[in-house]
Image (cartoon, rainbow, N blue to C red):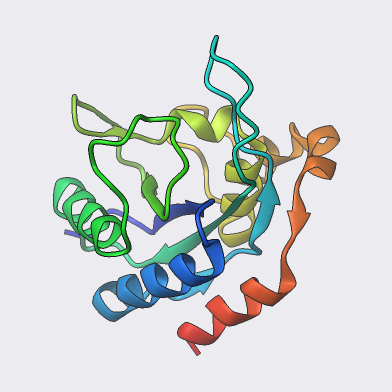
Amino acid sequence: MNNGPILIAFGSNIAPERHLVDGLTRLHAVTGWQAISTVYRTKAIPVPGGPDTHDPDFFNGAVLLDGGWEPLELRVLLKTIERATGRHPDAPRWAPRSLDLDIALMGDRVVRSADLTLPDPDILTRPFLAVTLAQLLPEWRHPEERVTLEVIAARFAPRQREMIAEPGITARLRAIAA
């Protein structure tokens, strides 16, 4: 079943250059993703209500792949790749991680389950997610907000200065799909 393009968000703050290359190479071998956003370095999000731990910065971005995946099938693949790159599935939600792969959008699908929420609600609250998705599909309409990803990303314009482009790792990752 093809319900439109799929956007996968990625991130790492443990040896990000090594883990992103490894993880996105594995993902490309199975999905053949076609495009990748700029990779941005951002401060780690602190644990809500927790102490400021000064975790390492994250490297974040997104990739675009064709539809044809079932949501839970794709989620299992992403979690398998995360574990293969050293992510511990039982680590706390806010812990540093070798690799984070999340389905951000699957075409127009809206899913609300214990295992998966689509579209990812963080698109509306995190600049590094909104901006990277908009780079890949600026005219795509958010299935619930009914505005384009470009409009959503523009809401974060003042906060984009908190995002530092990483051209070196971006080029290395783009070479995977070349």
